[in-house]
Length: 376
Image (cartoon, rainbow, N blue to C red):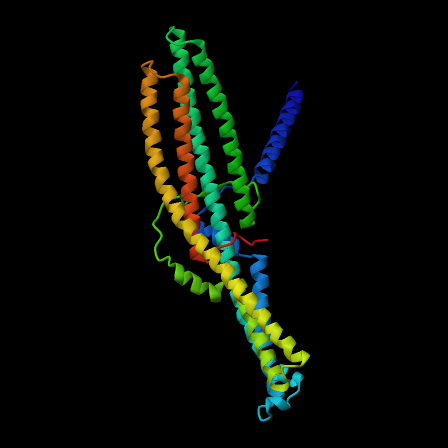
């Protein structure tokens, strides 16, 4: 009998250990929650980023090209020989190649800086996106709570015969709608969380605890003319087009010194310079248009946020009064639902407007006016 008891106890212990092992494996597969400020998220996205690493290598390579071009120019030192007597290969080595290498190096630095800003802006966009999604879930949860309270009240009134069955059915329908909306909001949170995790190189199902919150802060130091001026040197597309003008100008300078305007080589070099200038002008115009649009969006976003704040106050008071009228039997359940829907829409609009305003400010902070992150 004792032997049988020992066998049963051993089997039970094996079962406990097996269950513990399974639970441990399950817990191990679930990533731990990650607590992050916005700056920590940006730093994490920058670390071990393949694009940044590749661009940093490109900068080093471009720097080596500058040194190589200088050495080649020194070996082909023809300063004492007039340009008209040099052949094109010598001119390329002494004048064009060093210029081209220097421009390429400076352009690589601009690209690196632009890439970092693009990544930071992309992370900030995703961070605010998750915060907004969480706020949407909170708003929908509050909406469901109001709907459930309305159903409880309608049922109580129906039980004592002060309202018709339609009031209860209407309240029940409103609860179902609120439940669906809340479910969709929770799904949006998961989607936004995955999007941010992807940028941070974290497992997509990592729970995130965001420490910074959405809060309005008046933008300072944003000057349209200054932003347009800075873009001439800091925008990658504009800077690349400017490099093209410098190289084409050097080539045309050479052709102009050794050929006449009626030759094909002269005309070809002249057209290349003209095309380069056109590309540069187009890049400037396109970039300025993006900056001006961003500036107008910033102003509009600020106005919208202010307007939604007023709408929120009005909708909140309207819902309170409608609720009192309903309690007194002077309003229908449909009027209460309409007032609640208006309040919810005002809340959602308020937070969407705040997010758009913060991102509009960030565009000027990072100098990114035409898109989000370039992370791969």
